[in-house]
Image 1 (cartoon, helix red, strand yellow):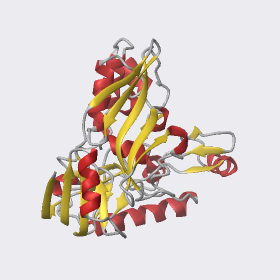
Image 2: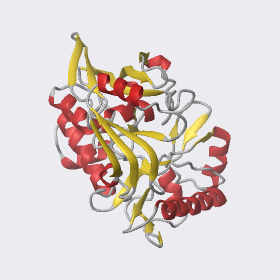
Image 3: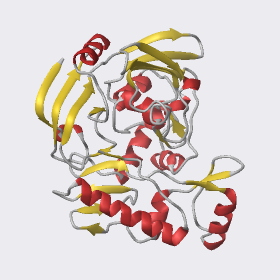
Image 4: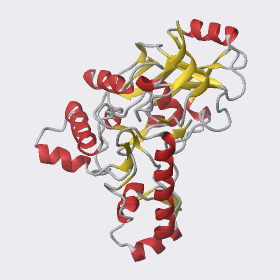
Length: 337
């Protein structure tokens, strides 16, 4: 366990905000987390649990306790001819888990390659990309209840998963800390190639259809359009893709027949927020030290020295533009702290 006062959170947020936490506590095991809960009662809103900070936007110093998990490790807990279940520590880097799965020829996580963050956040945020979401893989989520220090295991169906949502973000927000997550991965080939330009990227490369080549293709796509946060502060996709009623989609598509879309079900359609933001002319634009990435309109960037409030101000202007032009509300995926 490591406890530090007035700790700089600069290494723990990809937007590159140089802010401090009054107290920063890093723990290596479930037992240490339980001890922290005994010694430092986490009450009210003066505590925060973070992962890699790839989905956070700090607006100033944090006047409370910030916790970070270093619970690591991969463990195969069940296996048969069809699938394998892998139990992973919440503090593992998400992409390290994907690389581990691909190296073992286990299918399911490859489309989620290069998503920033840690394993614990995958279960809270229900991360997703290119037609796959974490909920498609998660079997169980192990947690510690903050109020009691007791262990609880949530089965997939208890997690309330939806697009970028879970029970841990809604009714049980701040009530549980994720310690380990178990994923079910397939042993037989099964690919998701028809979302975005995944299939086109593989065909362009001329490579054989293999698990490792799919992962490499996803990585190339992401690297081509997403800035490296080590070079330019950002949190990846800043806004969620809005899901709208089918009737509203039909009205919009009559005005914008080229509008890309993905059917969610018979009643709802998902519209790429990036496309709408681009149509509003925001790609490559800036407001002071905050800007919109020149390759991907869904990414807001710290151009150097921007404050959290400057990023938020830019995001609000973008939301207004999209609402005025399309009548569609877009919501930040990033959490404002």
